[in-house]
Length: 356
Image (cartoon, rainbow, N blue to C red):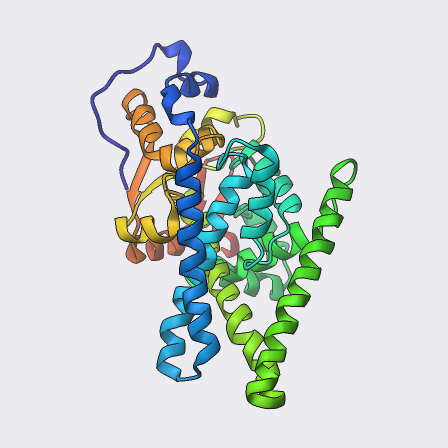
């Protein structure tokens, strides 16, 4: 995993550790939103979601389910990525319309937009990879691991394995930091209101699916239909999004920072990754979410402008911007090495160092 290479046009030393200076080199054109691009992307995402859902509603053939479920799960992910963009206010010009789009797009992924805005937009983006602040894939230290109960250690070993990213995201991010969490102060009312609205919508959707299932398959169908239409695609989405966030911020050469050493520049530039992915997969479902460094430098950048912004940043910071090709092999290798973290030494550790 190397850094992006390009012609070196390094800025003066006094400008190398300010995130505002990084933003200053992004072309103004990269901030231009396109309503047409947004509508086209949303229409594509909706069609890619409805087609496998319709197929799932009409068949119980095992091989068809095994084909349609991953397509539905990826479609939930595609809608979520666009909802994530809208939640940042980056999809269209209207702030109100961005929020509505975010809320609608996050329904299939069962996400509370107001809680996501606080946890992801404000905390994760505001304190990326800072010890004690950024809760998303925050590593445990050796002392913390030794203090865990046996059950907690087993859970940690599974969630930080190559198979556990979905379980980690489901428990830590989706459940603990969103559904269970009600922020104090002015955000509390908005989060509670969004939870009530989303819960109502989900009750209607599950009820409609159960009714359709009961008509076509009796009591068993009433349970099976919402499970195959809504639950399984959601669980596949959870695995996809957990894995996606992991590869953005966890690797043997990605540092997490003690509070006193951390800065916006370090978190957004040095501890974030651009992942090179299959262009077809990116065009259908990912919407440039893997071009992650410019998104962290400035979340106002719309998804279709991220590659141009990344090129501009890499030109000025060729030795800082981290880029890697996304592969299952590299992910498995990273997951095998990144278990615990030594914040003083700035390095990842295996479990053996905690129990030695």
